[in-house]
Image 1: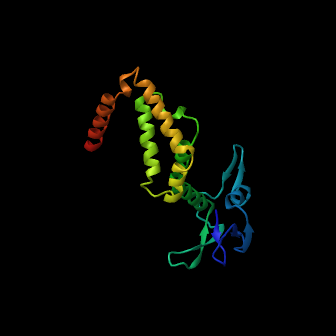
Image 2: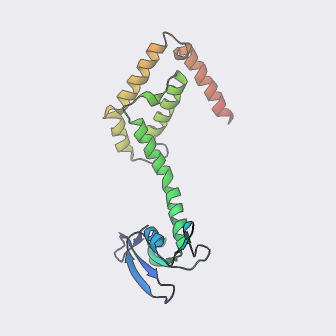
Length: 194
């Protein structure tokens, strides 16, 4: 967890507020690590360590952040507040992590994940196209296009699915044009009704 220093840059410095004296003691590093090693925040029990002051909102930590107007202000937090803050940050970042994971999976050389049937491959290709369409704007457009068009990614994906389709169309109804059209119409009707 980071705060803002006097120059407006991110810092790993924070203040510890001594609960006995109220003195402010500057510290550096990770607040979570400090909480987990701080005898004021933890109490040893037979079951291990537990937070002694999780029920209280006694502030033990101070970080500096910028408000909406860009003014640096102090924020005092209890160990419980710190954990909630970390949870909210993790929750806010999880959608970016998932999107990045999807991008990595789309760029893998291994084509096994593209599916064993026409329906599975179609679902993969729909997700692939949606990812590279970047409708949610999570990625920088120019870089995403360069990754798709100027590397192996698009060619590998199209070749693998096209080859599979050509081979299967000789043995299975799932890869014929008639099946694809029927499949698309059914999905279209299902999507329009929801």
